[in-house]
Length: 572
Ligand SMILES: Cc1ncc(C[n+]2csc(CCOP(=O)(O)OP(=O)(O)O)c2C)c(N)n1
Image (cartoon, rainbow, N blue to C red; front, top):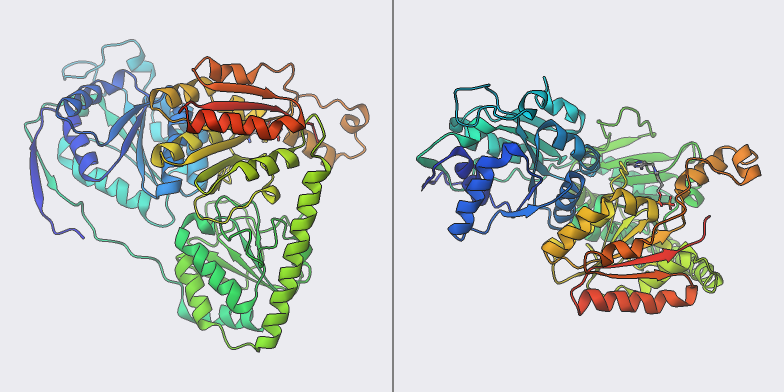
């Protein structure tokens, strides 16, 4: 908690003061993609290095999409916000897709950008290059404002501490998101002598938002008396404490849990109450549905919920107010910290006769077992097929994952084929799904947790979107060996599948031609990593998958080299 203590440091410029402040506020990394606006910061970082100050550590990232996605990756496994800095309007534009991902995933992020010099002459840092005129916009933050919680421009040195602290407070308050600050060159370059600031920053802990106790009681009564309750979770595991709370509630009332499009481990997959990833079979009979941090608990166009079901939504923002349209039925909206809400629900649960609960739990267990048997058979049925099936490849990755492995999935890994029991052993793409995130997010995870083995699972499409040269270069320079497994089906399968689903008897299905979705002839993706000194291998036959994974993991774990497996898969 802040005790208001102040400290003073000698500084020569505002930029140096800014870095001192970031250091004091505990920022670990500074992901930068620099331009002519960065001069004062480049110089300040050089001074920092000469003084042996290693935090925030500057990380040079040669594409902004990679920089933001790496910061996303660090924060999703540590919870701690990072700083990214891009170059003026153009760098901000390159960040946009990754920022949309971070915003929809509620990643707290301090996003900053240079701002072309304000004045045309007369101040240190004034315009002196051709680009300095055209790189000014009437509203730089407007490029991405819809996905920000807050934006501001640093006007002068006097407000430096207040502005940075406000950005941090806003970004980390629930629901968490992005604060965006522009930094004019003259302000950063302005000469200073001393910087005096509060050691801890203002404001004590904000605490966890508690749900309305009266609503908790009503929800608990509904859940307790339900004959066929159902719990659907998507991102509730963002906070590891919530997983335990979810297990306790599920066990107390024998409620099955379905993870629909999970972004985190929400509930251990081997728990007998885990009933997979598709709510459809359970929705029709469920009389009470608890939706836990799930923006889309089911697809109304494809699955029908029991029209009489009482639906309870819980989470920091159960209405997802930033989504223009989202109208799932809601008997109750429990707004509040998810872990606290789940604990309160468990505590408020009424007595239910033990016989009923035991019978229900046994039925869930049986269903759980038969699901697993079916999933296993589905993978074994295609284990000899080449081109390789996604199910078999996913199963082999699941087997190869050890206790200390983190899977970072961008779409293609089949969740039914991997165990996801420990919090933090799995992350998936943002609900916004701007492709290219997976490889860089995995680099962020490796940066935050160097002792872990990190495997990114991506499609060939997603790999191309990930700006591979920039990502592999950062991996080499900062010693971040990860394994990337490319599920290479030679196309944008999602585009083909949705076309076929829309028009099952249409021209594309009839002719077998799906224009605008083909990614062949494909390059030898495994050679790209080789150019970066990494281990690359093309895998064409099903029986090669397991040994190839072992070879690649050996390169990563024992040789400290990044690796890419280009696995030739069949099209759906
Ligand atoms: C930046 C961006 N552009 C386009 C899309 C639309 N899109 C969604 S999935 C997909 C195909 C992804 O291809 P791949 O990664 O190879 O996976 P596959 O669908 O083949 O399994 C595309 C193009 C997107 N989500 N993001």
